[in-house]
Length: 301
Ligand SMILES: Cc1cc2nc3c(=O)[nH]c(=O)nc-3n(C[C@H](O)[C@H](O)[C@H](O)COP(=O)(O)OP(=O)(O)OC[C@H]3O[C@@H](n4cnc5c(N)ncnc54)[C@H](O)[C@@H]3O)c2cc1C
Image (cartoon, rainbow, N blue to C red):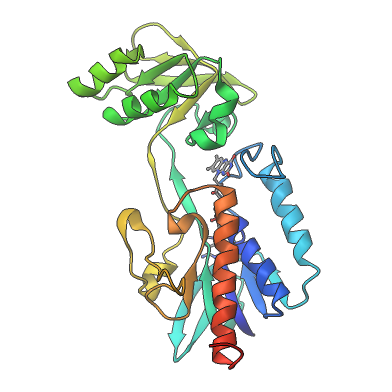
């Protein structure tokens, strides 16, 4: 199969790029393994025009919109290898699809590192969250906890005070510096240093935090500060230069990575990690790619 653009990843960034490329009559193949980062969540917040839509419904709607563009095709598979050959790229997918692409857009997203807390899985995305911009608003007036090891939980708790009045910082049995403890005191935020035994809840709603010692803490929500990493090694194996926090460095003028013909968009660029930004970055990369084709074909300077 020969395509103008191979898009790797079918989250908001990849789908947005596919839409713009389709509208530019570019032959694009989008391959998606289907582990979009927010699939544990029930509702997308902060997305203009789509407030509260479930991630699954949003993606389905976006995929449906793409059916109008006959030059765009979608495959539910993992891209396992991309090799530069001259000015093009040879690619291989887990389902046996192989082909040649003139350009590659990586929109492979990130994977969150969940804190190791017993009972977290059924609560994650419903009442246990990592992003205040995504879910903080819904907890105004409710009792919440901030979890993070060392000073991380304390720093998060202080920030959360802007969104919620009743915040307790939990360090999960790790030490918190004297300086951070003083800051918590100044903000009137209690600190629980004891190791957490488990999180209790029903139907995804957190009800209490159970500590290995000391009284339980009734809470309606918990925000955590851990970390995340790239979902795919493709940018690494292609030799794209990386910057701080594992981001992929791009040229501000061409939006290209250090490997000519390879572009990135969405969370993997590690700019602001929101659906709205992923959509915008996907569109921006698609425009940059189309401009590169227009230049190549003598339609513009
Ligand atoms: C629990 C949770 C809740 C969130 N809530 C909100 C919210 O309310 N509002 C908001 O704006 N943002 C929210 N976010 C952030 C939002 O999910 C991301 O900003 C957004 O999904 C980024 O889109 P993306 O396209 O860059 O990556 P993703 O949506 O993660 O999509 C990347 C896709 O690429 C695929 N992929 C990876 N490697 C390969 C490969 N080699 N081959 C093929 N496919 C591959 C993945 O499987 C995945 O399907 C939330 C995040 C989480 C974790």
